Amino acid sequence: MARTTTSNQPRTEEAGSRRSAAGLVDAHGRDGEKKLYEVVADRLTAMIADGRLNAGDRLPPERKLMEMLAVGRPAIREALLVLQRAGLVSVGNGRRPIVTRPSAATILTGAALPVQQLLGEPSSLADFFSARTFFEMALARHAALHAGSDDMRALKLAVEESAAAVGDRTRYERADLAFHRVLFAMPGNPLFIAVHQAFDAWLIERWRRLDRPTERDVASHEGHQAIYEAILMRDPAEAEAAMEQHLSLAWAFWQTRLPAAAP
Image (tube, rainbow, N blue to C red):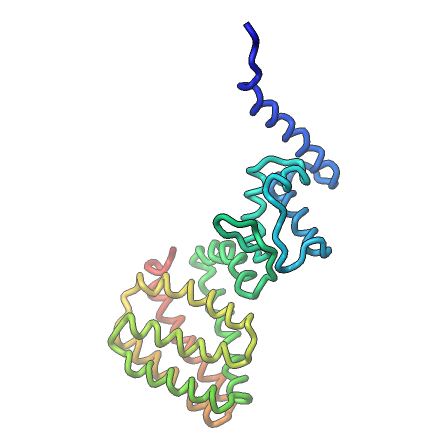
């Protein structure tokens, strides 16, 4: 009876892939500590960085990449996920990935998981509020010095919505975030907007676990009003002080709710 080799083919291909993978790692001076898909991601990233692949280019078909890099399909797919999270490629159903330029938002998204893991420790919540206070005091000062008429209209509307939303938990959450978003947007720097989005994502998830009395929203709105008035008066020192006071009160409230706010 003739012997068939069909059942051995996947195993043979797997062994060949392993040998090729070992060669790929050795050829690039790797010490074996990196996973294969990470090595593949590094190779593809290098091709983008040195101009062999440019923004708007489609990557070669999956099978072609497997041949070029001498690895199997799983390593290619995992590597593409790494590049997608880094904002280097756009992956869609039914089409080859397209090389893209990373934006501030995608850069921060890629960093979000380790940051959230850090903030999972109660002691690190203080670091979050310290960073936020440092950042937003500078934004308040900038607004007092540089806000234009459109900026002031947007800030005034945000303060008015903050006042109207007191007593409505969900509406006030949105109003509070919107007020701070106006300040982050004023410098016109997309990285600042991305930072605010990262702050938003962290805060919203935890706000919804808290017992937030109406008195806290009243105090928060009063802080918004004080910040707005200092900016309107073009007083950068007072704007900084008002923001510091506003966020200090917010931190004091969070300290009383830390067990509920923890992930």
